[in-house]
Image (cartoon, rainbow over the protein chains, first blue to last red):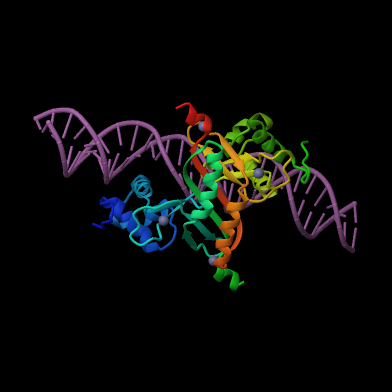
Length: 135
Length: 135
DNA sequence: GCATCTATGTTATGTTGTAACACACATAGC
DNA sequence: GCTATGTGTGTTACAACATAACATAGATGC
Ligand SMILES: [Zn+2]
Ligand SMILES: [Zn+2]
Ligand SMILES: [Zn+2]
Ligand SMILES: [Zn+2]
């Protein structure tokens, strides 16, 4: 079974996390299900339940604007603060980064309003360097 | 027919925009459909096609993390730059704001990567002032 | 043993979003 | 007038995303 620095993953969690890690990019829950049919997966809930936990652990991120999931780009990630994603609309490439300064400003605004910030979704759409260059 | 400073809305667009404006908060496409059945709407596409245009005009925003849509909070909005949303998980209240400074920092990062930023999704989850106060 | 908690398996269903095709209407060019 | 073109609309069917409800299995603690 695949292990993790902070969390001992269950069998299904390890299979789902392995699929996402190997893919190296975002996958929908149903794409993961298809990849894992040979491992005995039969129903979407098997994927969603594992994803829920992996997202809770912080080692998988959900991309709201794609209805997809991606393994954290940090090696041996044990969970971290607010992440952001630059998503290329030409090639589908996704780059994760951690815009602490921008998040600080957003949090300043929420605090000025008495809003207790729990988590952020920051997804940037556009065209990546390679796709800009090629056309 | 409802008019708009920049766009003369079609009948369906006006009906959908009217529903969102009157609601004063986010609605899903199917919730809008139900509201407009008495006006003759029968199928989701009638809503989605109108929403596509309204979002394109910039007078309706899509909330990716809710799969919902909300009328721009600006009076007589004619479209504007990157918006952000603070979404209360207790009461569902949504507050729109325009975090130009944070967006500037995000854009700086994308430019440093050669990424051509087209648009942003910034959605903050947490608890609003009223809900914090009430427990 | 027994209660309890978590993980899992399975069926069915609910929710969100599109494809494909047809028709109505306006406008521009001939 | 009458075509061509573009856009808005109506309708059926379907695809894609996500969860409810119930059953089973294994581990832990008493
Ligand atoms: Zn990460
Ligand atoms: Zn690209
Ligand atoms: Zn707005
Ligand atoms: Zn609230």
